[in-house]
Every structure is written in structure tokens, then in C-alpha cells.
Length: 81
Image (cartoon, rainbow, N blue to C red; front, side, top):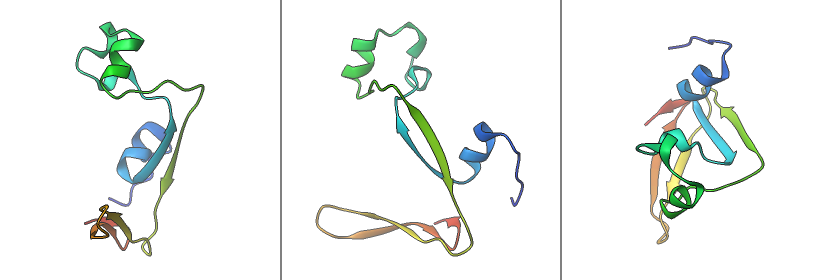
């Protein structure tokens, strides 16, 4: 859209972004009522940090790579493929 919201929660989801650290329990079905053990059983992790950063420009190409080496385009020239 070309819009910069100046709000990380909006901007990180409007672009390609990477997050390192703890997952959010609210991303799981009924996450607010789950114990840490139940979240871990569903693949959630626990960490002291959660850091997001955005990636983007009209020159960015990103590929996913399968174990067998096949590449899948995810991002082309700054846009989701």
C-alpha cells in the first residue's frame, strides 16, 4: 500500500518481518487459558525476549528452500509472491 503507519504492530504485518524470541499465547486457540506446558506441547516456545524487525525495499527477493534444495519464491521485488 505504500503506507507507513508509524506503529510497529501495523507496520510489521504490512511488510515482510522476522521475529525472534517468545511466541504470543494469544496466537493459539484459547491461548489465554492455556498453561505454558500446553503452549509448549503445541510448538510454542518460551524466551526472555521477543524482537521483531521489518525487511523491505523494491529490491528484496526472498525464497523458501526445501530440504531437497527446491526453492519457492516468497517475496519478489519487495512484494509477496
